[in-house]
Image (cartoon, rainbow, N blue to C red; front, side, top):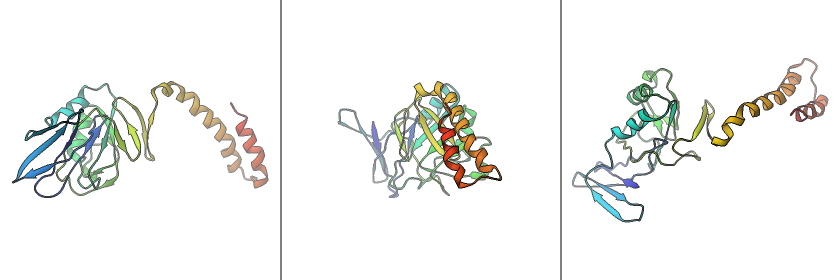
Length: 211
């Protein structure tokens, strides 16, 4: 379902909250009244003055999820991050319901009042929440090219986030250990006081031979 909404104030605010997530929004307002256009899967339209669902529903989905969880939000505004969905209240609320953090292409605010320990990877810091709408949730989203779906396994650290295929999860410890062993040969050599460029070929060969 795609929904869009433009308040009469002339700015458009569209956010997609995915993996608890939003798929889309578009919208219009006439004489101060908000009109929602719902596009059904068959392409037919439903015009209504009622929002697609109460704002609390996506948050309750976070509470019902198997923990730990991470919230992935796609901001689908023309200018992602124009208004921040995340701040002091949403970070505290989602942390209390069991979420560990969020990944979004949108913005976030209240960094000095952020819920302690709640992690954020976002597009930028912004000053205002604006007229933000959660349009859909539990649908695939695209955050800076990372395609994420509901219940995907996501690894995130200060450098970014990546979706890990479920079938690869149990293979990760062995793969990580192998890379560490191969890199250790190179790092130990580089940190040695007598290291020189002429040693590089042999060091790389030794690294590749580790299995």
